[in-house]
Every structure is written in structure tokens, then in C-alpha cells.
Length: 428
View 1 (spheres, rainbow, N blue to C red):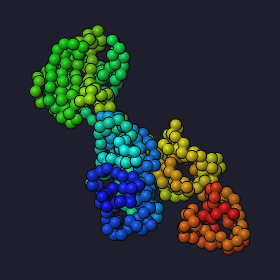
View 2: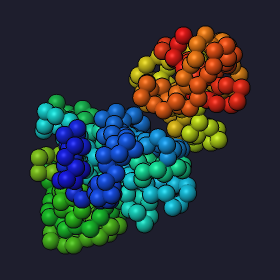
View 3: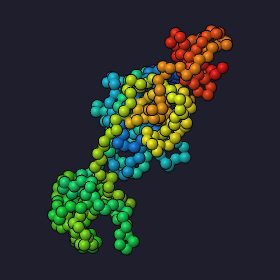
View 4: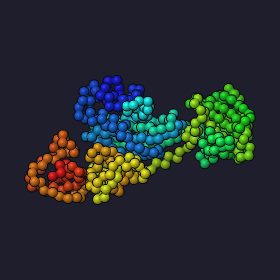
């Protein structure tokens, strides 16, 4: 966090620049709020969102909710390939609610949990764009300011980080991929983009022509050092070369034309396109692949956000991801109360009474309107707002009180009194 946030650093050190989140924490500290119950809960929620993030797969869309009385942060873990651009868009209601959205990667060089801070959302546009410089999992943390109540809509999309290298080319024109077998036990170190002979081959971004060569496996080739990444880009099997070494080029400038020179003379015309870093070649497909980003709408009842529901008569599974093959976190017994905090596709994001977070299929969730059973108190009984012995009682039930049970866990029952009071009592 920041240098003065000693307590949080001990929990989970974060290597990062100064951010709006850190500045906000400092303002809480200056107001002597970090040692309050709500302040501690807010900090702990932020830590938990990184260490216990749920896994999603872009393109991804989620709708969610923040409650003032329960500080919450949401974590999203997703996989990116080197060269992919991640585009994140956030919409909040009310507009005045301040929300922090930060991107991290896990630091694998340390033995203790540690996070490298990468980027934060632009407070003016509510957007964040990031190009992955390595393949792996990345983590988002979404958290509202203290005592905030409101909703959010989050889109996580993917985009190419460079322009397509063949005029009017599309994903469907890519016919040869990284790692495909080649003669002489070689592996393909690029992608093949098929097009008519003579189709312009284009610069994918600003750069400088570093080499123009004829001969060898590539036939007529052009090398361009791009300004964005500093990589060397390899354009091979050209029919014509239309640039010279040292020439500056911009996005869309013509470097040559598609052909089948070199060892491609017996194949249909195509461009072999490769990317080379100092450490060697990398798969260029994530750099140029055009994602459609068809977001699956949350398809949930927005009025349910922030409210308590329960698992129906059949047990339900709590998943780490909102997908059929998602990892199961735990099995939820029938009638287990959950609080709905968000939703994606046909799943609700929920928090259980034992503070587990995950996704459950929406068909397993029912409202709390119908009691599942009744009981009569045999002694004076305290009703708690939350399932915690340290919580302040919201009511005391006299002896002989008939009470409706609307949810239950192994240790307590969620009840509603005739006066409409909702709370927890220990199992009698």
C-alpha cells in the first residue's frame, strides 16, 4: 500500500507506485479511521479481494453492488497472453460514488504473498487499458470508498495491440499457427496470413525498417523494429519489397506485397509474420487477433442485488468462476442463506454466512418470503444482525415466542419475527 500502512504491508506487501487507493487510505489514516471497526473491515476486504479473487475469462461482464454497512471489495483473476490488450470499462450508480479499480500481477520472486501494482482506472473516463507484457494471470481489485452504497457494471474485453499486417485481413485469413510442425523437425515461429498475390503488406504501427533481404527460407523479407514494444517484426515470402533500410514507417504504410517466395513457392500466397524479442521469437497471434467481445449479459434480477436469499430445497455448488466447468469452492446445503453481491451470465455472485465468496447458478437461489419451518423459544433468546457472537443484538425473543425460520446453517438459524425483524439465533 503506502509506506505508512505498516499493518497492511505485513498482511500482503504490494509493490506499486502511489495510487488513488493509497492516497485514500492515507486520508482515512489522517482522520484516525483506520483503527475503527469499519476502517479495519474496509482494509481487510481489500486484502481479501487480492488473495481470494474469483476467476473469470474475458470477454466478461458483471453487475454488482456495494453496501455501506458491510465494506466489500471484489477480486477478479483472469488469464492474458503476451501481446493482448485488456480493455476495462466501469459504470457506477450513483455517479458520485467513488470506486477504486486497480490491476495487479503476482510477484513470483518472493516466498511470501506479494503483488506488483500495474495500473489504475482513469478517474475521468472510468476506463483502464493494459497490454500484457507476459503470459499469465492478472488480478483486478474493485472497491468503493468507505460507507458507500451503490451498484456497478464492469466490462473486461480484449483487443489486439497492433494493427493487422495485411490489407483488409481478418482472423479467418490466418491459416498457419505458432508451433505447427515444419520440415526438418522445425516448429513454426509465427503465423501465416493468406491473401491474394499482390495484396499490400502493412506496417502494424510506427517503426523503422531495419533490414530488407532476399534469399533463404523467407524469400523476399522485410524486418521492422516497432516503436511501441521495441520488437523486431518479420515479414516473409513477399512478392515485392517496397521499403528500404532505415526508412521510418507509420501504421498502415505499405511495406511490400503478399507472395510465395522462398520455401513457400509451392504454397498459396501468404504472409509469414513473426515477432522477435531479445530473448527470441514469441507467438504473434495475441498481438493481432481481433476479439469480437460479445459480452454475455448478466441475465439476473437487478432488484436482488445486495439482498439476502437462500439456497432452495436442493443443495447448490459455490463456484470460483461463473462457468459450467468452474472449480467448486464448497457445497452449500439446502436453505443456506447467501447475500447476492453481483451477477454474471446465469450466475449470482454471493457471499455466504461463513464469508466465502463465489458464484452459484441462479436457479438454485430462492427468496426468503416462505418459511421453511417454525420453532417456539424455550428461553429468552438473543437475535443477532450477523452470525457473530460479537455482534450487537437487534432483538430479544421472550419465552414461548413462535418464530419463522427462513434460512439456516449448521450453527444458527435465520429467522423473521412477527414484527418483521430479520436476524440470527443460535441452534437450540
